[in-house]
Image (cartoon, rainbow, N blue to C red; front, side, top):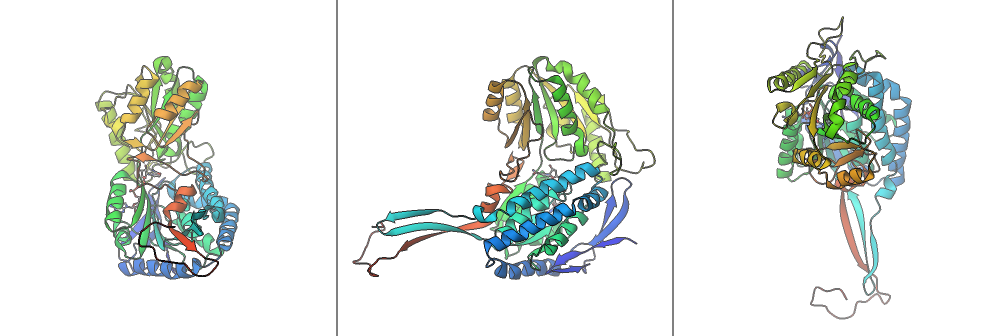
Length: 497
Ligand code: NAD
């Protein structure tokens, strides 16, 4: 019997009345493992209403009690770490170890949300005028919404609702319809941690549910992570409807390899950063930029990448799993073909790869191109597959110019033993997250996730202090308490005296 994925609305788990049924499939064989009914208009309205009602109570709960819910939640998530990773691996195809990493990076945000009291501190200035003090509070917005992608079904919802709720908001999550079971388990554990019913609601569906949330009068802020076209649409529609929006989108991340870098370190780091998680990471390295004579290392890079063997989630030898669905596989294969047609050298070709006994899965083997130039589609487009494009430049300045000309700005890294080269790169590169001898520089939650350019639309980023600013409003008070109880005279100017 197929598992029915429920919505969570006002603390109740409901299958929903929606007529649009969506199948959740195992990417390793495309067989259904669950199904969901896309939320109806009434169900989305109920979820927002539940979040709004719960938030009215929640915003009055002491900040340290809000923090305690997060403390209990992070503990429960750790207790259920392997169980969550198993659910996640089965519905995404990720290897178990990688699935554990997905859950762990989310847990770290919950740990940070447990520090909410110090992050909610406002500012004070005494004597802004004689006998007058000014101070500010930050207060929650009301109902916030999260719309999340398939590729990190634990980490990315956990970027959003713990911070929003710790700030005193209610929340409606619309997770990816392709792997909704992990977020549902996250939500169940959140209630188990003591979160009041209705504070976190989960509705499933696709564009219809999202459109309703984008235009709902009671929704104040929208956090989105996903592809560029949808991110642009969410940002435009949300802001047109006067919502606060942060929209994280696609990427094309470059690793710059300097001649003074350690060759073996570069090769080791590049393998996992390029084809790990089948390249379905927004911070994956999809372009390796070989500076000067490091181009001679390309055959050894290709040889190392070629050794990675995809496989099933519970195969401890598997380097990564299948792509999420047949359309994703078809798109990656089409892009690999375009690379060949446009004249890149396909050093390792994963187009025909399959896993014996699981031939119907969405497998793509590790693939490496050399001689890639900026005019080629494999350079211009986000492939979101296990494909590494190698390109060559003469100098660090050329590498910087290449990366800065790219419309994306999510992550980048430089491998070098020169502090001066690293300093120049970190200073001049127009990318929001920079690794120095670190291939995938995802910031920990006391910082924020700071993509730039077409990788992010908005201004305040995910988690860390920026998330607290995103999910709150600032209120500034100017106060006078004269000892006499009387303010003498009249003031017809705007100046405080
Ligand atoms: P997607 O854009 O297809 O879907 C993301 C979410 O939007 C899902 O919940 C989906 O149901 C919803 N959606 C899809 N089409 C919609 C539409 N027309 N209108 C309204 N909502 C719609 O993305 P995906 O394929 O799930 O995820 C992969 C993408 O996410 C990649 O481009 C990747 O780079 C990006 N991503 C970015 C980051 C980041 O931090 N920048 C992190 C992870 C993933």
